[in-house]
Length: 88
Ligand SMILES: [Zn+2]
Image 1 (tube, rainbow, N blue to C red):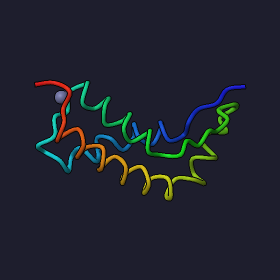
Image 2: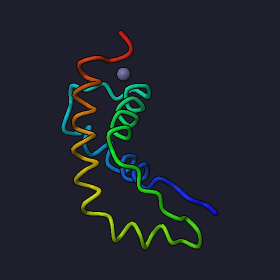
Image 3: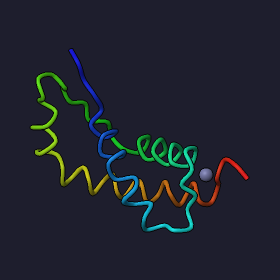
């Protein structure tokens, strides 16, 4: 059985959108990765079956509520990484 944490999909989808609101935030590979990981650790995982394209049906169902949660967590993660970047 194939499955995926749907939250990962939305985090990847929304990361650039959220970062666009923070022109002072570093957008290097490491900071983007850190932001995604911090946000995902604060989100309840939602696993969906990816068999036979089912993920697309589920995405439609969960989209709006999950997006609000993801955007909120991404904004917090951006603030954390801006305050404490892991590089100079
Ligand atoms: Zn950086």
